[in-house]
Image 1: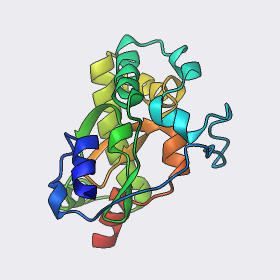
Image 2: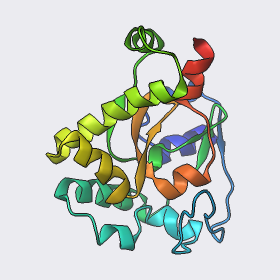
Image 3: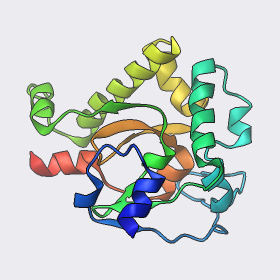
Length: 192
């Protein structure tokens, strides 16, 4: 039943769902995501955020039309039924909260090549993966790399998330910081 519901909630998830260990996370709609550096100072409940992940206060200040379209698409996708958090192979799955484009992450072999002359650290891995996303956002939004870097956090209040599905994408800051997780970087570090 859980696999079927996951497929309904995430119809374009890029991995073969039947081979994954999937569990539904039970979280009260009355919980208020908070902590972790002052997230959700507005005091929205999880039930409200499930249906509008990019809050009105953020939507009002999105200047770039493509970024606005990304945010509206995320909100529209979650408006009716609300985002459902799952654990996939023990890690939180942010696929339903993705904002905008998704970019394929490097395989272990590709990452080893990219880091051949650099120390293999979490920081250096993130530098590579964040750059991939920021460049793609810049390209799609007609922004410079620096403008895209700032827009992700300042206009959308999002952060890059390296997902265990093998992709990096933006997710709302409130969710990324509230649902503490490991993921791609930890997995890559354990394989070096």
